[in-house]
Length: 81
Image 1 (tube, rainbow, N blue to C red):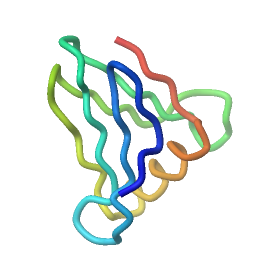
Image 2: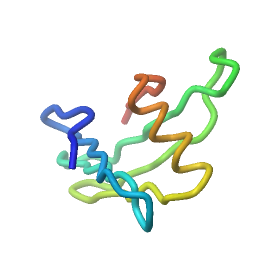
Image 3: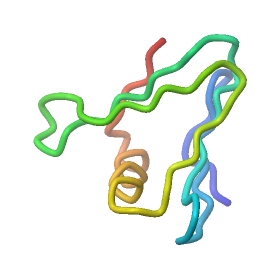
């Protein structure tokens, strides 16, 4: 496992495997967080992941999941409440 990003509210981890979940996004806060991924043209936001307080979200090993993982590594996302 490899931590991509971590602060007091969120931890993003690459599981370094290619089946089931490929990454986890953990919400360590007591508020709902939204991760907005930039679209491929980089001028707008596309996919959004919503994570409830003190919960986690698994990114699946599919085309969307691999695209999201690449955007996480490239910091092409925005986290908001």
